[in-house]
Image (cartoon, rainbow over all chains, first blue to last red; front, top):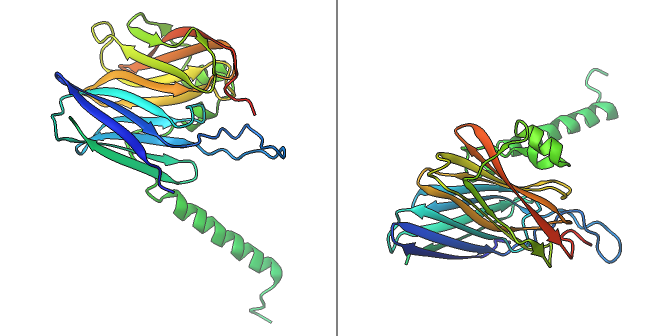
Length: 103
Length: 159
């Protein structure tokens, strides 16, 4: 299952503002289902934000990041038409990615 | 018989084989970015003291770190946090950590900020119960922090 990511990248003066919304349960492993069985941990472990071919921000996450994670950041430069992409890997090895162009 | 295959030998071979598979899996390029290794022991720490111990001790407070969290979170499962560093007061920020005091594993996230990226990050975290949230910033090899208390009316880790 490859997760979709909604990304918006907007040029604001000298800076590009990125907002990304990922679709993921971010299950902690601490919860139990209705039958009392523990729900296995399932969360994004690693996130990378790339501008064209350069990594601008990288994150390692634990299960405490909220479900359907949001990430906001700003980087210098970037002009309309440049590519901004976000990719993640979770603890089960599943991946998600998405990209957009700066506007 | 010289080459008898007895069950014990089979079991051992099976075990070795399994080991080889695990080793092969470990070297697969399952990482997105090789520049920084996941600080797994810090993520696994189960209380604030040991989390800070993994970071080399409790950091000193720094007023250049602007840490925004709600004073009261109605829903602990989704607590917006924003860390921003005033670069005129604290330059060369390399990493930003978000730590939630009362969570089963206090370290929620660690961000590596590339040169040219603003030392600012915005995300949402789960907060199990009322307690302190810490923004820890690594700059020039040293750690600094900002603290804010968030009151939670509905826990973020309930089942």
